[in-house]
Length: 255
Image (cartoon, helix red, strand yellow):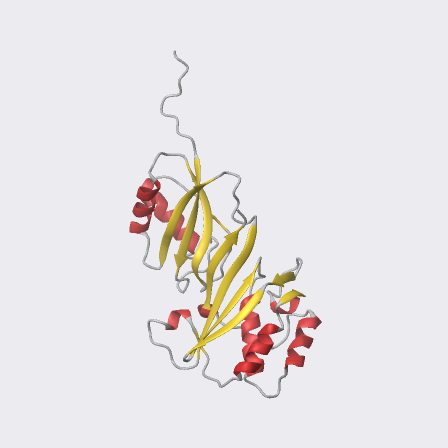
């Protein structure tokens, strides 16, 4: 024998940029008895290529949350051109999920590591939305003070303990650094953009809900909101914004 390895193919790791409408899914993370984004991606891969695959994402978006720039990695052990892989996989995915791009990466690349910044956007409308928009915005018909809303959001920029604005059952470190929060208004639509290396579960939705509540009620002030932040107690009664308005826009990594 010559010692050659016949038919050997070296495994490759790929990075995928994925967009999805999360309305009909119970979040990204795989669940046994409920449809999830990663579950559909993996099941579709097996149908197309007759092989199992495991995807690992940078953000575990919750039920109803959308994405335009989710980052996930996976490994394959068969030979196929990336363009063909992408086209064949996308062709069998439901319309609510689309793989925007695939690129080969080193095996040392981990989607959770070396993150510089995650960008999320929350969309709010003050008038009843069109059916094409309704799945991606929070319809908030109450009047609110625009400047007061900006002041409330500004309160959360910088490094803070966000224990009051995350999942009530979370027991880990709740200190996070928010790089920026910007508010942009186009006619009746408000877009709030959050940038940070990482966020706690429900953190953005609780900040948006609480800020809008304060901005739409004269009996609540910025000082009241600051006291809730400083109290580090998630059991306050200010509302949380629904998942439908939240989209993971982009994840930036160090080169």
